[in-house]
Amino acid sequence: MKMASHGSSLLFGRWRSKWQLMRHFSMNIFPCLAFGVQVLSGTGGLRVGAEFLQEHLKYNTFYYSNPTWENHHLVFVKSGFSQPRVYRYWDPKRRAFDFEGMVEDLSGAPENSVILLHACAHNPTGIDPTREQWEKIADVMEQRKLFPFFDSAYQGFASGDLDRDAWAVRYFVQRGFELVCSQSYAKNFGLYNERVGNLAVVVSDQRLVAPIRSQLTWVVRGMYSNPPAHGARVVANVLADEKLFNQWREHIKLMSSRVIEMREALRAELINYLILNIVLYIYHCRRDSRVQFCNDIFDDNIFINYRYKIYSVFFFFKNKCNYYFVEIIYYNYI
Ligand SMILES: Cc1ncc(COP(=O)(O)O)c(C=O)c1O
Image (cartoon, rainbow, N blue to C red; front, side, top):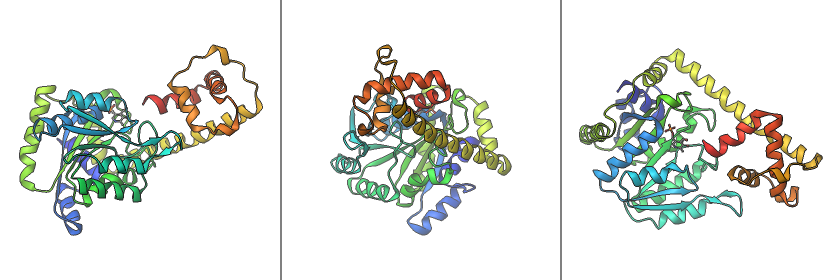
């Protein structure tokens, strides 16, 4: 419980209790209330949230981005959702975010569909909507009466700033949406195997808090009874202590800036290599999704027959510098 309330504060604003949150938002729009339930990391939050929405609120249709983290479909279908649908997100021709496609698909969604939205650091494209685009997405969802289900698996890792990465969720709350958000601490706390997560719930009527909390507890009870304690205590202690919290925030900044630096270094090295070297390993390599990633980030103009050449670059880097290899895997498999 302690972890869940600290986790919700992290999402909605540091040191903001649920009452402060209510006051803060009621000044702008209307009163709302946030609370959290401890879950088994991000996946557990998705599963518990989806089962609650399906079983208790009878939602049946859910939309997820194309592409998305491959588990979204499975988790929702296993939770009882019978109508899986996708909204466009990545345009392979332009190699860019298909904002118009997404808005068009959401505009055609039936009322009361649940829309899975990546809070930040969209997996696997790495492209997030701009603030203006989020505003438009919220407009459409409001008009169509769609229910937002945020998936926040990388808070702090997109921009290095915990608040900035929570902007979209906070914006939806400010707009008056009721929503759920699954928070994972696997990556930003490095506690992958401890399965620490929070399912944050925002409702507009205080009277709903007790029954929803009780129904969520009931879902958890029937699924795994209760979550493990140790990782959650680590997270709760860090979030509750200002000194530890600041230290953790600095670590996140360091980590995310290192990823950005490595990405730039990789790009420079790959381009140098492609320009300066003869490709040697072409016949040794097999085609897989990692190659597709490389295809997507490079411009066709740089080389003819780039697909085959990229294979060898991939192996070249694997041999020469393991870190670059890991970086590529990171983008595809996490
Ligand atoms: C978008 C997204 N959501 C959820 C998860 C699951 O997170 P967890 O490992 O905390 O269950 C991941 C993990 O890879 C993810 O990329």
